[in-house]
Image 1: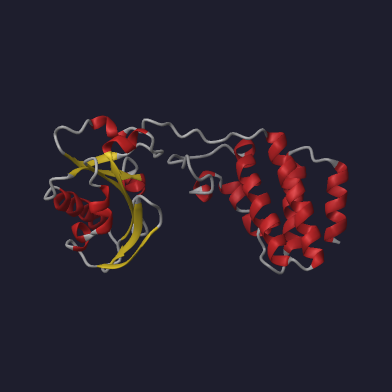
Image 2: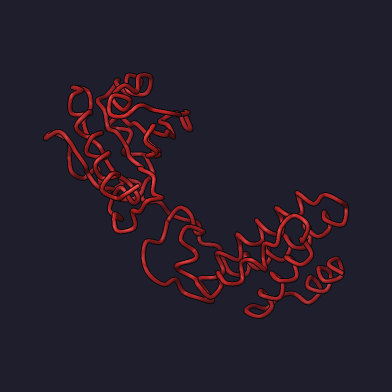
Amino acid sequence: MRKESLEQRLQEIAQSLAQYEHALALLGLGSAGVETERMDEFSDLDFFVIVQAGCKAEFLNDLSWLDSICPIAYHFANSADGYKLLFADGIFCEMAIFELEELHSAIYSAGRILWKRPQVPAEIAIPAVKNSPILHDPEWLIGEAVTNLYVGMARDLRGEKLSAMRFIQYYAVDRLVELTELIEPAQGCFKDEFSAERRFEMHHPLTCAQLPDFMQGYKHNPESALAILDFLELHFSVNPAMSQAIRSYCR
């Protein structure tokens, strides 16, 4: 899907909304917002539709304002505010509908106004509520990662391999992703304030090269745990007793 096709679809949505008197604005987010440089053939369209007070249900319950542009092949309500949907031509969207007052408490990244009525303030593009990601103390992250490995290996030995995989190859790796910023500061731009793993490969290429060792799959929990532990010990101070206990389980 070419970038031009995605931009055209956004303009088509704006033109459709303009025909509805209760529609107030269309706000593009993510690569459909202020980060259009990263829009590519794999991008979906994230957007907010802003409507008059009391009119939210009208747009949620009747999607003809979208279906009239291109038939909707699939959609489901992923929240009380909107849908994930696939147009028949392959364009995928994540959208939400808000009344103007609701934006005051909504959490979102800065967006791009694609269309608005004159009375709508341009300030809607900037969230009133700033997202404040939780910044964990490095010692907490190390402690969580190490204890995730220990609990995961205990469950692996018990035969609970799915649960073990989650603790080792997901939870511990999540903590490692947060720690990476201390080892290999992010390169480039477009950091996602809501999801640290987004574009991790571009931001942290050296650590990324080791990810296959950290996540070797359902049948390789011990090997994954040892690779993660080796990485943690190389870059941080790990409690010797915990390290020995994990290695004992891995053997």
